[in-house]
Length: 262
Image 1 (cartoon, rainbow, N blue to C red):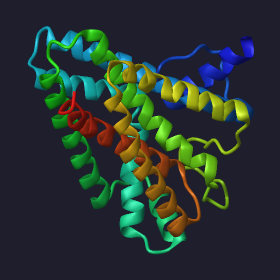
Image 2: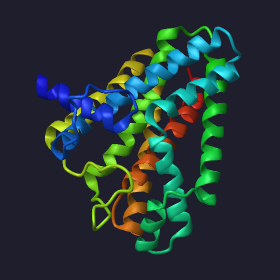
Image 3: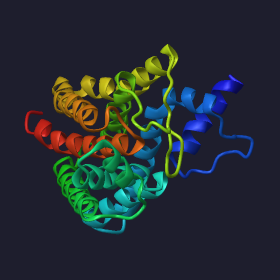
């Protein structure tokens, strides 16, 4: 049990800015094992973002409350995934060879492709989440909380699956900021699937139409994996961050479609 607690806090330390106990120190072994709890980070970020929305909405309009909720998610993760999206678009938008793409992604400066991608990303998130919350007024806080948890969790589930069938792209295994998980056991894969799909399974008890969420996410998964393989022979942390953020947008937009059939 003590070991599992260390593994969980390693995931929390790696994927968020939430303070962890001082006795939690980085090690490659614990980082690899922490993948099993990666979807639970979605539970945490989704829950806290929802609480920020609820508290903000007591005083402000839906629009301001949604902005504060999105900002809370960004602060909780330290823009971890948003940075990956921007670097990914810069790299694949400006590079034409594997080496040039990887060099651009490693550059800390923000380029035009990344800036435009972030503008559209937050635009889609804001309007989709605002429209969804307006449409679902009166549906109950528990149901809305579950929607928040699921869209954060399922997006992480989609991204991490790429690492199960692809190899890490950088030959020197370098990273501009943090190490990347590259080794897995059956426990990590089982943990990802159990914790990643549980919120969706609960949503299916409300309405089976939520199963439709898996189809566009499967499309994103297969297209991204093949695209990354074609251009850089695998994936990087920035690639995973980009997929996670695109998955969040796809889930929110699909929520709006699903709502029409509920």
